[in-house]
Amino acid sequence: MAETTTPPWIDPEVTAAQAWLRSKGVAPGNAQTQPFAEARAATRRYQAALNEGGPALPAITEHLVIAASPPLRVRLYRPEGAGAKPAFLHVHGGGFAFGDLDSLDRWKRELAEETGAVVVGLEYALSPEQKFPVPHDQVLAVLRWLRAEAPALGLDPERIGIGGDSAGGNLALSALLRLRDAGEPGPRFGAIIYGMLSAEHDSLSHRDRGDGSYGLSTEKLAWYWDLHLGDAAASHAYPLHAEMAGLPPLLLLAAALDPLLDDTLKLDAALTAAGVEHSTTVYDGVPHGFIAQTALLSQARAARQAVAAAIRRYL
Image (cartoon, rainbow, N blue to C red; front, side, top):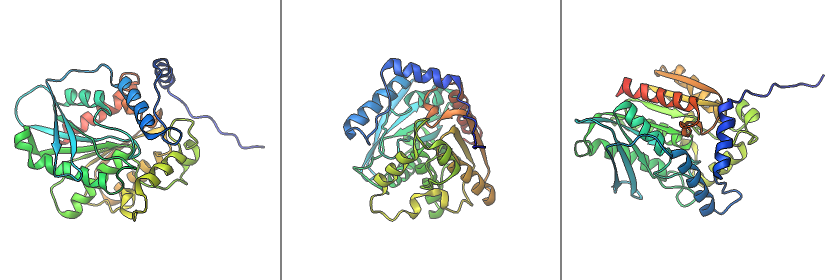
C-alpha cells in the first residue's frame, strides 16, 4: 500500500489573513523572479500593510551609529514613563537581503507599550550590496553603542536584551556568541525567533515544509545563503554549530509550517546539552514570518506576549 501523509493543520486565521492581504493587493517581493529594487519595493508595501494601526508612542527617534562600518541608522521606540529604561534590540529578518527600519514597526511599537522598555530597530546593510560579515559586525557595533551611549539615551546599560527573527535571529545569536568569546558584557537575554541558523537543508522540516507551499522554501533559503556569503569562509556564519555554554537565557520561538523549524529544535537541544537556561515554543498551524501579523493572528499576539514576558523577567 502506498504511504500516505496527513496534511498539516493550518490555522484558519492564517487562511483569512492571506485572503485579506490579497484583497489589499500586497505580497512579499521575490528577487529570484523580480529586479531587486522592484522586489524590495513590493516587500515594503507588504510590510506597510501589516504595520497599519497599533499604538502611538510618546517618542520615536532615529540615530546614526557612526562606529559601525558602514554607519547605520537605528530607531528607538520609547514608551511612557521617566527614568533610565531597559532596551531591547530587535534585528529584523529578510534573508540578509530584505528589510529596513520599518520592518515589524507595529510589532516594535506594541512591544514597547506592553513592556515599558525602549525597543530598538536597526537598518543593517543588505546583500548583495554588502555580504558576510558586514551585518554581523554592524549588529555588534550597535550593541556596543547602546551600552556606551545609554546615559545620553535614557537607557540602563545593565538592562539590555537582543532578539531577532529569521536572518535576524542568526545575527542576534552570533552577536551573543561573539561578545561571550570576547569576554565583553553582553545582553542579559536573547529571543531567537524562527532563526536562520544553519545551511543544513536536508532536515525533516526542509523535507516536509520546504517546497514553498507555506511561503518560505528550501530553494530560496539556499539562494539567500549564496547571496549573503559569496566567496567568504562560512564556518562562523552558522551560529547553530557554535559552542553554546556561557550564553545568557534564551527564548526560542518557532513556526510549525516552516522549513527552518529544525534549526530551532537543534538549537534547543544544543542549549540543553550546554546547560543554558532557555525555553522553546513551537506555534502550530502558522508559517515563517507570522509574528509580523499581530493585527491578524492570535498566535502572533501570543508570540509577542512571550517576548514581552521575557523582557519583563530578565530586564
